[in-house]
Length: 306
Image 1 (cartoon, rainbow, N blue to C red):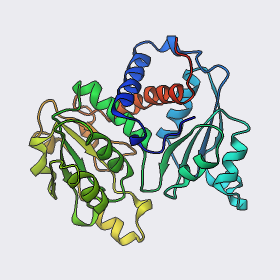
Image 2: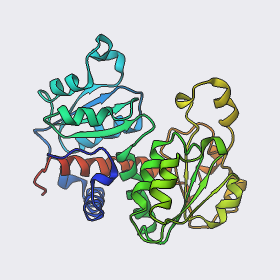
Image 3: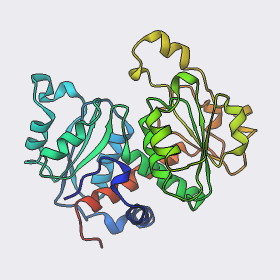
Image 4: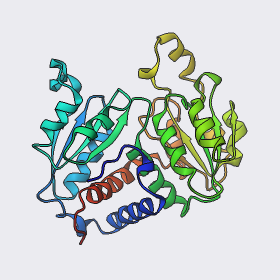
């Protein structure tokens, strides 16, 4: 039995197999429509979510399976003091696989140690969001055809953005990937990403404040919102939330084949006028999330493929 806590839980070869499976699901959805007819997915979401929770549920339903769970900590026995370990022990009696989102870093890992079913980390605080990373990788590969020799711009909240941390850790395993980290000084990537991932692996990167300075070099621009829920006070959030806004004028500086990704939800960091730009790939990215989660469920459940 395997769990998914981090994108590094899969080797590069296993990632390629997973992405190939997701691509085949996209091309041949009917082939997989009944592969999980007798399976149940539990979605244990202690924190609000739209795309991640609904895409997990859609993924299991597309495979013919059923879904149970909760979408709010207040509707679970956590309000009575039940531990994460006890919750997953009970859930293991009802479901075959579990996706858990929790505001505390490491909570899904604690659950996996007590679970008798596979546990998927669907986001734990500001730490990791591995299924979003798998979605991002599938999107990049589908748009660009490869990962090697790309220049990736990561813009916005790089300090608290768990999607950014997971994506950097996944992409450094490919050849000659370069990063431009675009953020105000207060929201730069944590030191462990800079020191233990980028510098330690001799990955080319630079940190800039102005989005305009980075745009002409980029093959992929990964925008993020400034996350209000991660700030300790309203004043800091208000000061930072409008630091970067991508609009049509800025897009004129970018390559014609540079694509924009965003884990969503969007607040105001991408103007709606950019939505009609053929380089805007963030809603397509949300669709890819269903395919990659279908592939992940099949892989972790070790379902015999058609």
